Image (cartoon, rainbow, N blue to C red; front, side, top):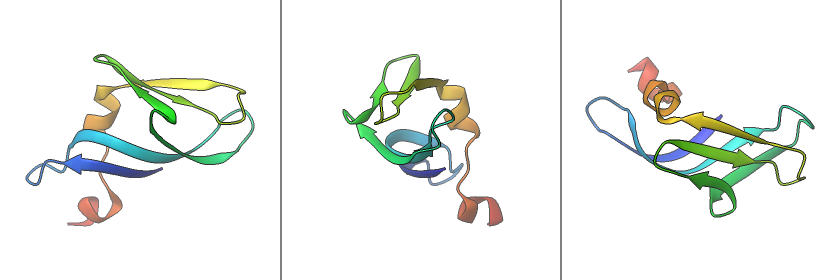
Length: 75
């Protein structure tokens, strides 16, 4: 998963999610989801919708708190 986000410089944790590249688990389509275009943020979760209309997946802020970029993990 490729993520475009504002990250805390000390911890590397995601503060705000702008966009992400994901693969649909149903149809295997790879797509970029941005706020208002396939990515919906609420106070409790984020929702990613496949552009082909076959499904959607919700994930919580906890999943974002655990995410680290490949470059951040190596540092």
